[in-house]
Length: 88
Image: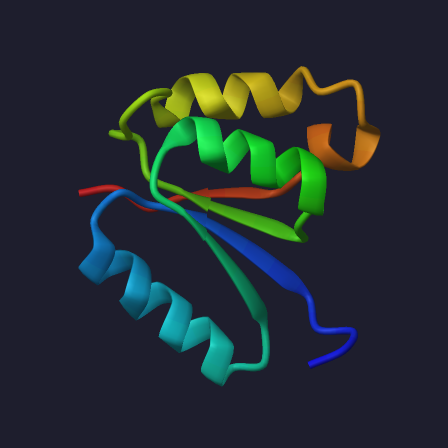
């Protein structure tokens, strides 16, 4: 899957995360999963995905704060990361 765009999904409900991952992998994307905000932030900084799909209600670091920290990143590609909120 070389050259595939990467989507980071930060979602603490495993069933939803698996569903989203399966859908996007079938469409040809590389998908990274994080189950809490801290891991999501670490992956956003290290992997610099093309898109972030973000739940608001997360353990350790909620989605709003995670989004704030991404926007404040010193790395321009991370700070400009497109975000889609996926929340109940």
